[in-house]
Image (cartoon, rainbow, N blue to C red; front, side):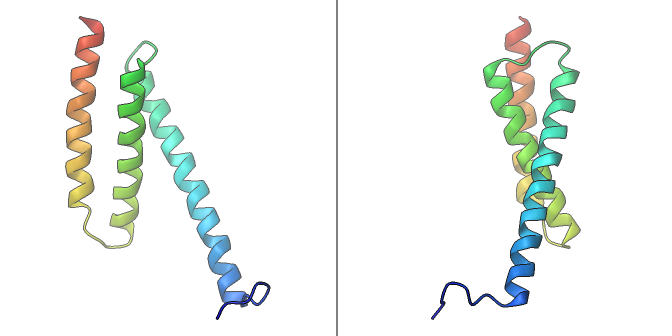
Length: 95
C-alpha cells in the first residue's frame, strides 16, 4: 500500500519527466494554434478556434505517438476530419 512521503527516486523522476512532457506538449499546442490562426488572415471565429485547438491537440498527440514508434493512424483520421471541418467553418465565415 502506498504511503505518502515514501516515493522512490525513480517515482519522483518519473513525475518530474511527465511535468516536462506536459509543458512541452502545451507549448507545441500553443505554437500550432498560433500558426494556424495566422494563416486565416483574420481573427478566428469561436467555431474555428475550437476546431484549431482540437487540431493542435491531435497533431501533438500524433507526433508523440510517432516518436515512440507507435501507430498514429487514428490521430491522422482525427486530423483529416478536423481539417475538413476547419475548411468548412472558414468558408462559412468568409461567405
